[in-house]
Image (cartoon, rainbow, N blue to C red; front, side):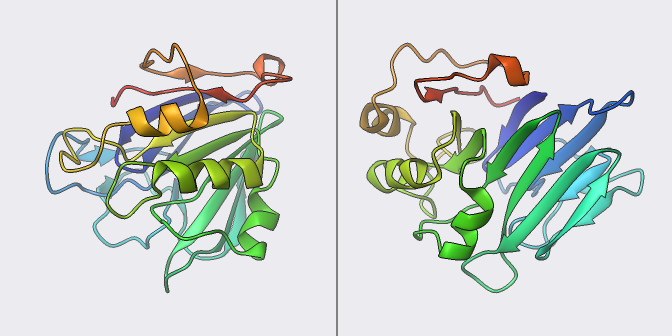
Length: 204
C-alpha cells in the first residue's frame, strides 16, 4: 500500500490486492489556496463532506459519499455517518491492511463511528486546521481507536496557511525523529507490533 498526502484531508492510496493496481482518493476537494491536482483518475473516490467542491475525477470511478460500503477489485470501502448532515467517516480494507479516515472534524467519536474505526492498522487524523482536533483531543481519539500507525493531515500547508503546524500534536503524542516522507509504503509485515508509530507525509 502506497499512501500520499495531497493537502488538507486529501489522501491518495495505491494498492494491489490482486494483480491490478487500484488507486483510491479520499477527500479530493479543490482548495481555495495553494497547489492541488486539477483532476485525478482513481478507481474509487471517497468523500467525508459530500461531493460538492471536488476536483474532477476522470475515468468514471466508483464513488462513496454516503454511509454504506463498496467493494472494487478487492478493495472494500466502508462509510459511517459523520457528525454533520452529509458527512461521513471512512475505512478501507485491502492487502490485509485497514485504514481509517475521520474526515475534517473536532468532535468526539460516537459509538457507531468507533465501532467501524476501532483497531484499524492506519489512522488518518486531522490536526492543526481550525475545524480539526487540537493536539490533546487528537491523542484521545488515537487512544480510543488504537491504530498501529497514525498519519496526521490538515496541518499547515500551502492549501491551509492559517492552520497550525504539526509540532504541538507530535509533542502531545510523544513522537520523536519524525522526518516527513514523500510517500509511505506499507505491507502488513511492516506494521509495528509494540509501539504506536507516527508517520508524517510531505504534501505531494
